[in-house]
Amino acid sequence: MKVVLLVALIFLIPLSSIPYLEQTNAQIEPLPPSVPNPEPEPIPIPKKEPEPIQEPFPGLTDAEKLEKLTKENEELKSENSKLESQVTNLEIQKNFLQTKVDDLTKKLEDLNAVLREQINVIMDLVSQLKETIFDGIIPSLVKT
Image (tube, rainbow, N blue to C red):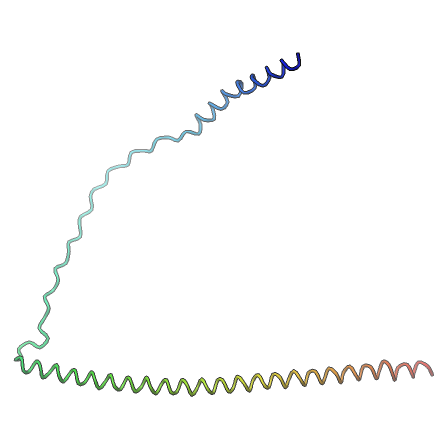
């Protein structure tokens, strides 16, 4: 009898929950998307016509153009050599300054080591002073 009731409850409970599930599914379904309003097509941007390449030296003959270009080339070469020499000088200065920085860093490390050693010596002296005061002087005063 109990088994029959148990089986009946197992079948009746899922069947009673079906209307509830149908109600929740009906609420979950999304609404269809709205129809967008038509927008006018944008006006295409016209392409710019490239400007014609202008002649570098108008009104000059080919020999004059060649002479002028040769002169500009020589000026650019001399400017390039000046810049290269400046770069070389700057590299030399950089190496010199780097050597100075390395030397100063080494001196700073040495000074830090000396300072640490001095602190250790001071701490040893403080420890000895403490032992002298607390182990030697105060106990002798207390005994008398």
